[in-house]
Length: 569
Image 1 (cartoon, rainbow, N blue to C red):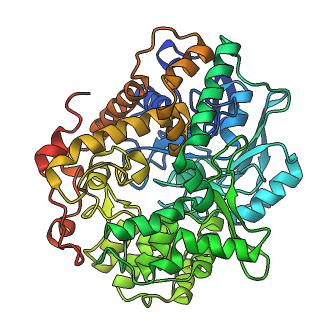
Image 2 (cartoon, rainbow, N blue to C red):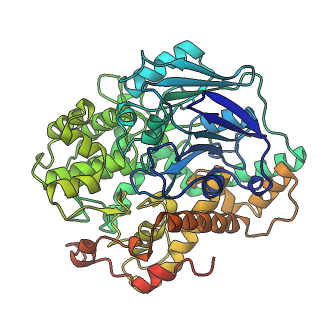
Image 3 (tube, rainbow, N blue to C red):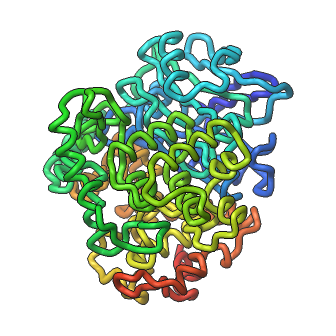
């Protein structure tokens, strides 16, 4: 394995040995280490001092179920701090089979314009002008690149939002079916990629092979135990049947589904946008719709979906709960077809549907669209595509929209929009939103399944801490959160897999949390260098004052709990 380092100014590639302090890191943790070692934390996120880092997790490359994810990171133009966003699809697997520990992209081109960077084992780095792709949406761009480079490559690419340097721009990745549906969405990393003059990076793993194993037989046994645990876990079947939209009824039960720009916690039409309703639609409409779709080869859970219309054509793939919450109930829209069409447009722009959904909620609050009107929402998305002044504000996210239009009810932490779990009703989730170095991000420490009274403020801290450490550990492994069902059920399987993969025989029994601790400590150090303080680890003041009407809850976790959550790392 090597570090591949690309300079976009000189258009050069260097392959380097892995520093000893990077060897036992991967994914999110390796990104944090690179940023601490090589970057000025106060750099301009869209300037030459920022880097964009692609890092497969430690267990990527062997088709372990739900464990071939790619982490992408850099300094966020949205939060101003450290950012890692991860995705499924092909990219992580291809990088691992090409012997890439990480791809570090640095500097800034001297001239305007966009390039496709083609990376291969045979030829190294090849630069191709992307004049024919500039301004095109993600779907058309991906189709042209697959036609050009073949169906076996992996591709990471940006849409018009990334080209316009919008703060909600993500980086799309091809799924196993060559659809650019797997987005490293959060924090504006697509804008960073755009600032590097890159429309796409193509990973051509021809001639590559799976990473070497220190003990193939032990790895095979551990992999078998892990897969068995995943398949037998009852939650895996729930996600196979309903995917993440299964969460709609659950958040409704807790009065935590964002409704009418987070002014309520229940949605009268929730049954129409639930996982159950989606499954009925998909099964009734038939192929190409599919309720159980794998976003990456080898995944046995298949929690993704292909959502098609009555005309037999795909509307979008996938349609996830977080998008349903932010672009559905949050806007008072109750048609899955409408939400799916809005989702497709946002995907094609290469933007984060959570951030755009929250920005649209602020727009509705400001009177720029009618509540429940999907046509109005689509017209605002058209403004984004056109790059108008309003469109750019929407593309820059909810915080910018609130400031521009004088709206206080803006659901953000560190300027990043909250996902579809109201922190007043799920207070452990609120602690995660407030304290994770990543900005409000449910994937950094989900607590909705914790066996706790979610309305009791004094007992949430440890649940959030445990979830944050576990998730940072999974992000270092390259594992989807749903892989956790197998990793926790199979005895010591993470330690066994790492030992068999690398020959590391000195790992602690609690290796997952140790990986998480390392990651979060490094991320907090970067943010400290960037100027973040305890005041940044707070839920918005209006959520501490304005109650959820269904249960009277405000966010009332103490500042002491927020300030001390990581004291023992």
